[in-house]
Amino acid sequence: MGFYDAWKSQEHVQLFDIWSRVPLFVLRDRYERFNEVRLLNAWADARQSPFSLLEIGCATGEFYRYFVARHPNASYVGCDISEVAIRRAQEKCPATGRFVHTDENLSAVAGLKPDVVFCRDVLLHQPDPFAFLQRLYGLTQHTLVLRLRTRDVGATELDPEKSCQRNYGAWAPYIVVNAQALLHTIQGFSPRPRRIHLAKHYMILGGQHARFLPKECYYPETGTAESALLIEKVDGNAPCAVTEEACSENLRLGLIAGAVARFCRG
Ligand SMILES: C[S@@+](CC[C@H](N)C(=O)[O-])C[C@H]1O[C@@H](n2cnc3c(N)ncnc32)[C@H](O)[C@@H]1O
Image (spheres, rainbow, N blue to C red):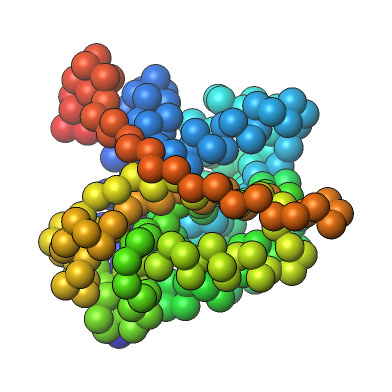
């Protein structure tokens, strides 16, 4: 299968662009329920100085709309392998260079040195998620924030033929990484990270959204989760602090935001 075929379709653009119809306060309500956005905002608020962010896998650019309102002094570049999605993002926001089409190895953004790299729901769709994670880590100056899928029990199934999801009529890898193997791998990165934080929103991943996953991913005892991960690079020889939390997200929008979203999305 072509690992990236799904994302190049017009259907992908249509699905993600639905959010462009909802007002900013709804978008804000939605994003701020996610652990990775909470981690990003806490990092940015503590920094108290302007910073640059590179978003990997920005699709049609809806996170940008939220981000620029929440952090008006920060600079933003988004990239994606989907040319049609990037074209739609550029239409909505024509500033030159803000949205960049790249290949899956991220060559088009390799020269940027952003303070933070943000990458939501992209790593799980890579045929080699550990290599991709290392590439993301290499891209950032200071901090990497992402959302991926983890399991507490059992080895990572790395074969995309055995762990995948059908999106828009094409199969894409859907890799659920073992949480301890993940933390161990990151601690081996060079330069060594100073801080790693993993926030797990536990849920059964099997059986949803046309996923074909190993059987264990259907059992609660496997401890599968949508997980937010923050990694900070080291400034010297400080030891690496690793923390984990179970942190559920209330993903239902507030009453007014939910009603407005339903109305706008049609
Ligand atoms: C599931 S969507 C997530 C979109 C957005 N980040 C979000 O959370 O709403 C995955 C996106 O990642 C993009 N993508 C997949 N592999 C990529 C890669 N290697 N480099 C850059 N973008 C990639 C796809 O084209 C798609 O737009």
